[in-house]
Image 1: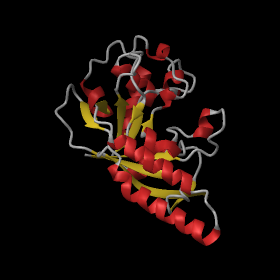
Image 2 (image 1 turned 120 degrees about the vertical axis):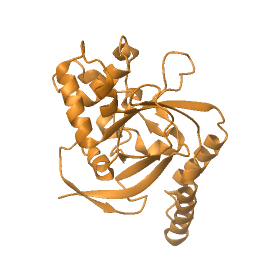
Image 3 (image 1 turned 90 degrees about the horizontal axis):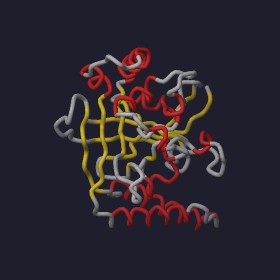
Length: 255
């Protein structure tokens, strides 16, 4: 199974506004992997009394004026699509038209992840429980190239600005290599899950929205499920691992 996720580099990582920092804090992906929006101001109170289906419905089917909006905007889940072009469109929120041109990693404003995994047996309809180890080896070629080009730039222009980033990424990859604990995540085929549930008692508008949108976008959801060290809930982090790749880099320009 191959799934794709679009992501964007934060335009202003020092901003206090969540939207300015990027949806998954993209510049820290080597150390953090993918981060769900819940990590940026999410509260355990948002999850109280919610089961997995509730989380899926809020994430995909929310209405702008609905009570589920707060949970949708701080969802503990990450969206993926079976379609690469759809995944890239997610980065703009469908609100503006942009041209996406392939470019080097340093010049990229947007990129596409690929999650490539052999699915285990379903734990329930459309729900797959994944176990894996943290591993940054899929990034080694990128980091080696980053170090090489940053040193070339220093030799040619005296500009050392890229070297600390490359060194930080190398150190983060080495830390990931030392993490031998088993990590957990839940992968959800949204349409299959909802087609198999008893829909009584669920919000019919959320159900309709979710089925229409998930069918259109061939949408899956990933729910990072590592327990927090203090036992207060689940981590919002999907660490780098052998199933997760940076697929393509793009620079966006307005049309």
